[in-house]
Length: 147
Image (cartoon, rainbow, N blue to C red):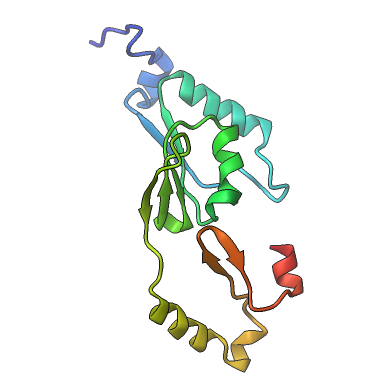
């Protein structure tokens, strides 16, 4: 039998659902906590807040660039590092210390650019470069404006 104390805020419902041992919730942004409006809906905020009130830490992991993900991290009140670029960039928001940065090498980036710049792919793709969390594009198109 478990003893519920202030250090273990699990409720009877948590135990019945098997959620009492959850310590970490990691959420994506697009299609998970934010929809087409690019905003976090109130029920999602409430669910995250409820998890946090039970002692669950909440982190954001996304394919987005750091600057684009930062407001979502802030809105959910996460105190954990922000995971961006599919995990290639992890940064502690409070200290601004970058904990992980795995950029492509210049030769690899040039190789990929050459591969995707062929005419048959050019109309299907929108090529984006991210250098030090700044977005660069070969040309401004309708797709890049939408992005």
